[in-house]
Length: 290
Length: 50
Image (spheres, rainbow over the protein chains, first blue to last red):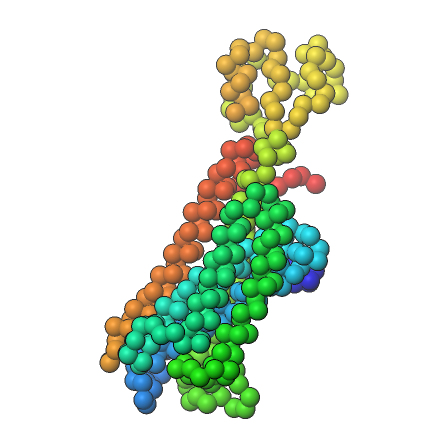
């Protein structure tokens, strides 16, 4: 657990983010060019099969994201550290978007091949249920009234909700389905042409990188938002940023007692402006702490 | 190219989703940073001295 969080912290550094961002952009460009113009079309489906190079990797990232939610939620329930909750929230947010994208891409692929935008097929239905579970997860995070309660409730849903992921993956095996069976992640050799497999693997790497990049950025946002939602009184005291008006002497260091500093209380609550020197006008005194 | 519309729509939607989410995160980052800076009075990248 600790190693996983440390790896995520390393991924969150500015340099790692920049490298991942550039690699993701390059990978996306390569995937689009190769997927659309280089690889030959499918013998039976024609060009519409080119949607496979984004539909399948996007579905893979959905599973990956919800897997991370599961691990982070279990980590939170085990350790109670809020960092795990932050990881779970970030991954769920990304996973929901990829899950919705998976459904839309599948629909775009299904229309010309199956002749329908949507059908209550086991794979499609379980995927829709998966999307609803994690939309519910994100909604639950909005309604909880305290960070600790929010983290606890969300962690429970994050662990239980993951049950649907293996069901989605195995749905085409367990039930009669319109959706095609696994062609890469299966026992035995993949049933796909070499050039198509290579393009698909490139897309897998690219979308995994995109997930890593978005996670790194989203974790940074999460840390900032957590800082901005803590009570103001627990933040460090503000510093005066405006130039001191002419004629007002700078306060003496704390270790040199003067008449002014001797009158100052020694414990000023963080976030609260301290009393102004006696010779400072009231408006300046209030402004200097804004 | 047959069914080019579906393929183009799929690729465009995917790239637009990724770009849109990245833009959304940039907006959230800026907003949170502005708030933290306003409250603490510390500029971006401020670090506590050892």
